Image (tube, rainbow, N blue to C red; front, side, top):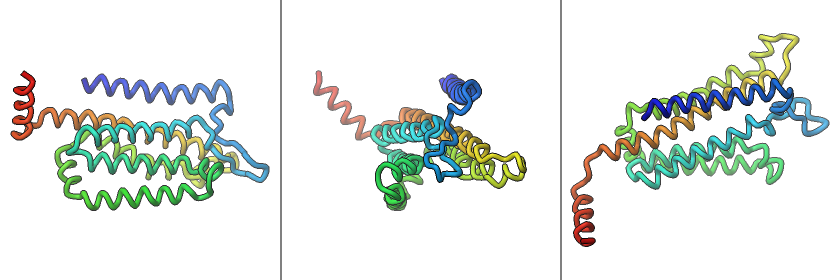
Length: 230
């Protein structure tokens, strides 16, 4: 039942956030939100933080959910492909630091550009099928959750995680780690909402397909197969 799933989402997200908070409270610095990798590094990086490492994992799971939808439900394949492409793009963006440091500098820019180009080209070519697929879904709690996650990631986190905002609030007591922590935690919640939306999208698609009347041609094929097996 849907309400049970939503309760599970609530408890899972709350448990993850509480665990991360308790970890930092019990062992200050354990979240590694500001790691200085070089002597000349004055700002530090949060890329080695468990908070940052959970984010690409969430995106990978979201992408796998969309891949499952694309394989199992042909009518929703265009929408699932676009969402999966977006998840892949953001996974690469979240791994940009490691791609720069351990592989090739600015490789992530090339990969992101390729992903965006493919998604846009595919969406343009399949725009009619995407409109039809979205029309069958809307209004959609799943897409609303994904939209809410996108708002937090693209908009809200850029405002509340702004360094200038926290400098104005804290004045001389400002430390860069404050803005980093707020930005990463809000971003994590946004990705979690995106994942919940992706999971609910799969449930909604399956429900729509099961309720839809079976085409006559499919019924005939199934009847013929059953008759042949007797």
